[in-house]
Amino acid sequence: MPADSKLMEFIKSDLARGKAVGNLQETDDLIGTEIMDSLGIMKLILFLEDNYSVKISDEDLTLENFSTIQSIHGLVQKKVNP
Amino acid sequence: MNFTLSDTQLIQWESIVEFSRRELNANVRENDSKGSFPMENWKKCAEMGLLSLITPEQYGGVGEDLLSSALSIEAFSYGCEDGGLVHAVITQLCCIVLLSLYGTQQQKQNYLGRLSSGELIAAQSITEPDAGSDVLAMRTRVEGRDIGYLITGSKVFISNGPLADLVFVFAKSGEGKSSFGGDVSCLMVEKGSAGYSVGSPLSKMGLRTLQNSELFFDEVCVPEDMMLGKSGHGMFIFNECIEWERVFMTAAHLGTLERVLEKSVNYVKTRKQFGKEIGKNQSVSNKLGAMKMNLELGKLMLYKMAWLKDQGKRVPLEASLGKLFVSESLKSACLDAVQVHGAYGYMQEYDVERDLRDSVAATIYSGTSEMQRNIIASILGL
Image (tube, rainbow over all chains, first blue to last red; front, side):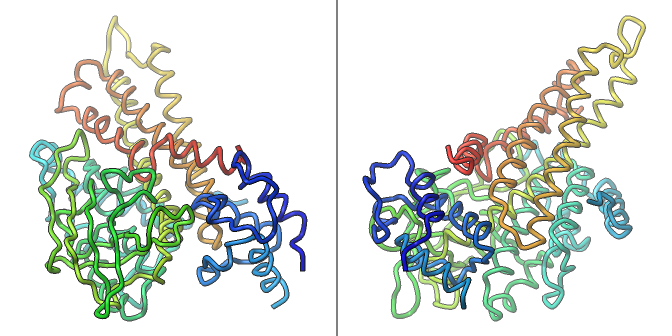
């Protein structure tokens, strides 16, 4: 299932802003490219909780869940439709 | 929206202020001069329940919500003139937060009660010579071993370090610098562990009764059950706990600010020059007006961030705004307090010079003012 445009737009326009990442794809590695840093993940969590009415727990904070836009989308979907 | 404090909160405020003034202010100037930690006063704070404010009741604590705890710390710092002691207590509370939020039942059973009673003193060990604001540049390493973990590296400026019985150490595994922070872990190390040593207390500009030092970890072997939270979750633990720390620190800064304001008001109403109180001069009274404005604004910021945390919210923006505004307001107020006291303010016997020296640190620890501005800008999407 493709990630929704809101999430894609946030990552492109906020987290990836000013970083030389080219045309960001859903499967691109956000951590290896340093798009997702320690402040970035905090901002992303706030964004997800505010926009999808989900609660991101400590258990969810794994590299696997936050490594790509696709995996973030998957996490949100699991939260929204458990 | 209701701004009324409960009767319990008001009674507790009065009780802590009265206790602090009566018990904690006798030898502050002398201890500051010698750089001595007032251990007797630490014990009194523990007996007063200041170390157990947020400890869950099943572990012998008061189990207060964060807003009530913030009010208690504000009252403590308002009544107690020893900024170093206040900082030491807050450091202990931060470690209790770490353990309360992320500790296993066994870890809590082992340490929470003794930390809350003051029997054990704790320290958070994060900062390194080349890793201050840039936490992820830390070099202290943790490696998994059959018997547990091996920690190697050193830390610096650690508050409560020379006294600590239990140290919460943040260390990295893996290679290189993970921008995500997914290779940072938090472990507990007990005093006396083989390979663990403590440097001499560091001399400081202010907060001199607070004890700070370097900590050294030379292949310190830590059992598996001393890992706090999951391995690799250190940065998430850090990000959560720094919000609590900024609430506590902001509360303490506001307490000091209120005390400095009252002292300044009293002085300018009694000091006369050219036949009138110096407070009648607008160049003096404007300074005190600004202090009062910042105090009231700071309280609104503090109570909002504490309330939000009590609702289970994340408050990175509010915590940075509050910490930045109140610490800078405190430093500015202390400088103005020395100025309106004139030459008396510059003398040690009037104590406002000590508040000024202490206040400079407020804009440095728990994230410098520059870092708070960076965080705020980043959250704004800049």
